[in-house]
Length: 407
Ligand code: ASP
Ligand code: MG
Image 1: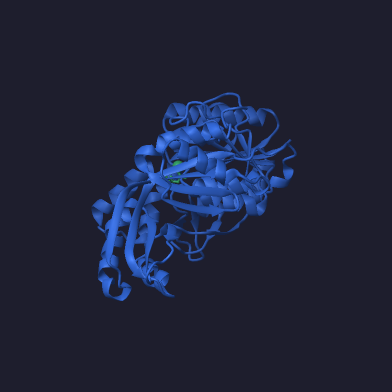
Image 2: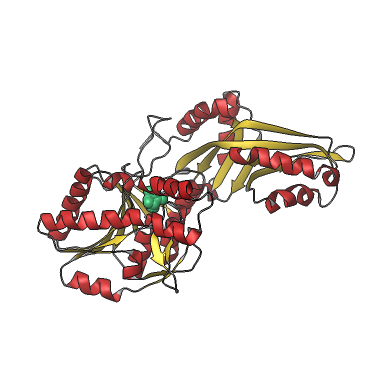
């Protein structure tokens, strides 16, 4: 007998029919003798609808009241799923976040989980119930409803699995696992049987949207066994997210390729090449709450240097304005911008032990005549900024060069 947490995302509970399918799946696990805790998201589109509704009433809704409204999406699905379970003869009980008492801090719309009271859940399970918990929500010490940030049901699932020391946390979604890259760009992309937490974190932060990044951090920290699976397939083991040490097989050098079209580049031309210049440029950008991604400062000539950095495209206009406002202080010749950039990243823990990964990446891109404009690295990741029109080509040739299409 195992204790399993299953989390179903919005598309998996998007229609009454799909909710009934989830009930059937849960019933199969229970019939096997497992104890099951189910975490559900709101039906797909519902959270967006609720947020839009709030914004129709008030331009800047009060965060506490916003949480009161948006948390109702999940309250609907827990009730519906329990009804569907009862209908096929399964004992089930639903709980909102505040009922189970998922205690969070008071940071409305992005609250963090502090504690979960596991005793009542255990009691229900031991009495033969499936316990169905609303994802994405909790309650603070004052009894106010909080929410955990978009995509937060993943974190609810992982947190419950950690609190109850579940044998596995299964995240059911509309894809059957984590892929080497987006199959819409590279049809040869393969589903990975396993991937390490570190790699998954990099991929999530690089814009691969399979799991909410905080849930991966959480799972890594509490050593929760996490698996991504499709709710639309009967069979399949999905992708298991592992701790690196657990993997006995030889690691492939690269596990996946992520990409992101949402990059814009700003260049400060002819900035004075003196200590503090990076701070003079990026300080005001940070003060304006703009996230900077990649940064490059060129070798100076005749006391001047070019300094480039990238931001999300939506922030480009704001960032240019900030630079203009600080023109005097920065002392540059000109500011240039380019909003047709993209970023391609290769990720793999195997990079640590295999030299030559960067050179293979750069050679592969060079052979296609793709110009690399910026580079950034971590221990297990290399990212390059290129012109957006070469993005798909770059991903395809890299996928091949690193033999990701070969099982
Ligand atoms: N329903 C919430 C959202 O759409 C939480 C989730 O789906 O995980 O962001
Ligand atoms: Mg979701």
